[in-house]
Length: 77
Image (cartoon, rainbow, N blue to C red; front, side, top):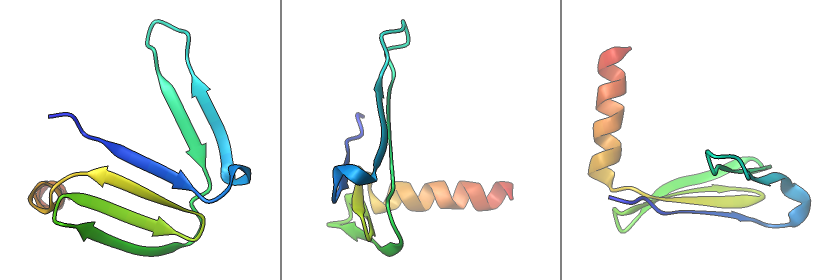
């Protein structure tokens, strides 16, 4: 299953680096300033949304998948 994501930054001055590689690995790097954490919540139990003062990150992941990851991490710790 492909995972989508969105990174929305309030201004280009908060973007530190955008790099698209011409190398064989064909990698893309996006770095920026997210600001202070304001909220973390699920949208329709399908999208994790993390809001900062300077941007928002959205990741397609269900609540069940996220809880499963946390359970695996806790069992390892």
